[in-house]
Image (cartoon, rainbow, N blue to C red; front, side):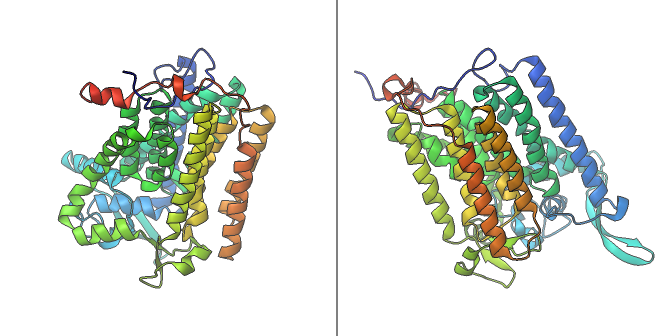
Length: 452
C-alpha cells in the first residue's frame, strides 16, 4: 500500500556541474578559494584580537567583545565559580544560550593546561603609573580565540555551498563569498560572537541536508545548532514546512537531544542559575546595546537588566507564518530553493524586530542568507541586495543615541533588504509537487532508524 510522502522535494538550480553535496562536490579550485578566505579571516581576526586585548597599542574593550572574552576567562576558571557545572553562575551569568560552545572552550582549556600552557587571565594595564584598561594575557589566550574563530567563521563553508546550489553565475558566487566573509568577521571578531556564526553554519548544513532529502541527519544538525545558540529556532518552521506533519515528531525528537545533553551537566550542578538564565534570558543594558520600545513591556529584575519577555512570542508567530507560506508554495508546486533560503532569512531577521535590546551583530545571520538568496537572482537584484545589505550594516553600526530611532532605522533597513532580495514567485507548478516527494524520515523509522 502506498504511503503518504514524508518530505517535499525542493529542487534547486544546479550550477557548475551539479547540485552541491557540502564539501564533497565542491570543485578543488572553489574549495581552495573558500579555505583561503577562511584562513585569512581567522588569522586577521586573531591578530586583531591580540592587538585589542593584549595591550599592544592600548586599544581595549572594543565593541562587545567582552562576551567572548568572558566565556574564555570562565573556561579558565578566572571568573565566577568556574567549572562546567557552574556555567551560568557568577560573572558568567551573561551566558543565556545553551552551553555547547562554552563546553568546547572549557575542554580546550583543560587540554592546554594539561600540556603546561598558561591559562588566560585578566590584568590591569598600567601606563605612566596609571591604569588605562584591562587586558587578557596567558599563552592559552591566542589559541582559544583562534580556535573560536576557526569554528565560527567555518560557517563560510556551508554558506558558500548553499550559494553554489543556487547561484546564477560564477561571478555572483565569487562576489557573494567575500561579502559573507566580511559579515562573519564583523560578528565574530568585532562583536565577539563566533557562537552565533557557528550556529548559523550548522543551521545551513541542516537545510542542505534537508534539501538533499536526508531529513534524519538534518534533524541532528539542527539540534546541534540549537545546542550552540537557540536563536536558530526561528528557522524551525521553514524546515518543518518541507516535511509532512506526521514526520514532525521524528524530526523534533532528534533535534532536542543535543540540547538536552549539553544542558544536563550545568543543570545538575547548578539548577537554579541554569533555569533562570535559560528560561528568563536576561540581557544587560550595556553601552553597546540599544533598548527597543519592547523593553518597556518586559520585566526588569534590575536597573541594568531586562528579560527577553513575551515579545519573542511575536517573533515565533511571525516565523510560523513564514513557514506556512513555504508550505503552501511547496504544496502548489511553486517553491524553489532560493525562496526557501529567503524565507529562512526572513525568519531570522525577526529577532531584530522583537528583541527588548538589540545589538548590531543581530542582523548578520539574516543578512548573509539574503545575500545568498540574491545570488540566485538576476544581476540587478544581486547588486541592489548587496548595496542594501551594506547600508543595513552601516545603520546597525551607527552610534545613534536615540535608541528608538536607532531601532526604527534598523528595522526599516532590514525590510528594505528583505524586499530587494525577494525572489520572484513561480507562476506555474514546478517539479516540487507533493506527488513527486520522496519518503526519508518515515522510511528510516521503518528500517530501524538508520541515520543517513
